[in-house]
Length: 104
Length: 104
DNA sequence: ACTCTACATCGACAACTGTCGATGCAGCGA
DNA sequence: TCGCTGCATCGACAGTTGTCGATGTAGAGT
Image 1: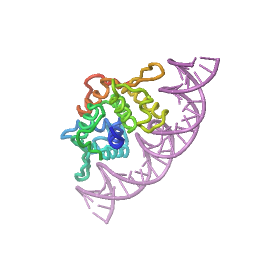
Image 2 (image 1 turned 45 degrees about the horizontal axis):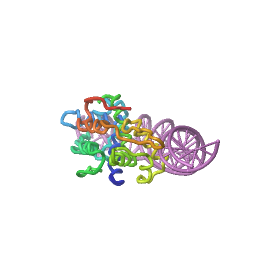
Image 3 (image 1 turned 60 degrees about the vertical axis):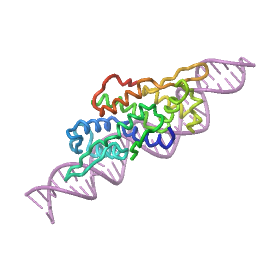
């Protein structure tokens, strides 16, 4: 794995390297229809709303989630291939890329 | 995913969240017989020896690599199921564990 | 015993990160 | 227009992280 690709992939793993963000992803994935607004996520995490918003920004910039405004609420959902692409990288022994890794 | 498990998994992902450590794992995996001593890793990474040693320690404490002293050298190798276990967690949508995640 | 090499640890430092309260902004309803 | 709610951003702060040079430690060879 070359340095450039390592930097991009590391950015995504770093986004996964926080318990709050992992639970955030887990909560979104477990939600019905695969999306959740921020107000659904703040309480079960036990973190303040600004902190949750910050974590969601990190996940967004890593290309792991996407948010869509619908009225007053912003609904977040997982980006389909992102997690499985990372999983494929792990299973490949961190060698070479197969396709795009949806960096950001 | 509960908070305890999130903390453990996050620790492993955090270990993967650095370009140097990713390249380190990649270099070890690519080495013949799957092991490499530190002196083989320092130069291709472009980092100082203490820094490489520090990164290896992080990877060790995350349960991703193991080092074995053989004479003057210390040979590092990937821990067999560690990366694939993480990959399985990603593919499961970060929901529930299947087996042990080999935390540390 | 001495020295050399390979690796780990220490001490220090700048940079980054997670967290929160306060504030700003956008959309909705009265 | 006014106020309310949901979310993002700001400013600040403590804690963590990546990095290096200097130093310590362990094994091998002379």
